[in-house]
Length: 167
Image 1 (tube, rainbow, N blue to C red):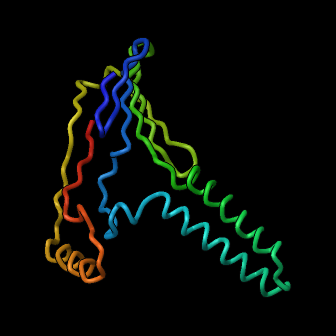
Image 2: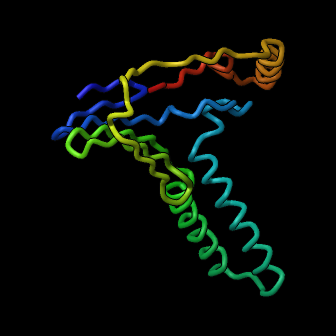
């Protein structure tokens, strides 16, 4: 099994399996990866849901300690569920099956996955490579770094290049 930080390549009983989480080459967020991540998105979503529940409960009932405990438990529950099912790490999976003579591509969606299969005879060659995207607006990055410095924080790697795996 070959393992790279960007992809995994395995051989199993006549199959070649390629898995990567770095497959979508879209513009990233202006926020840094340590701020804009799966855990933060899950936490913010759970807080919004619990905030709405708090407003509904507070407008209809006198609040007691049981309401606050329920809201805390609701937050924990939604955080775990959102992180596990909505804001999870998504992997592209390509299976080249010599036994059945097919090549399958499984693309993850929010719920489930989309599968496509083509005959293996239509595949001429398999090459794994990468594509790097360099930052476009250097002035904007310097401006954001300057603001972060004024606030006493550092944004490491803001102007770093992004690498995507190609197959």
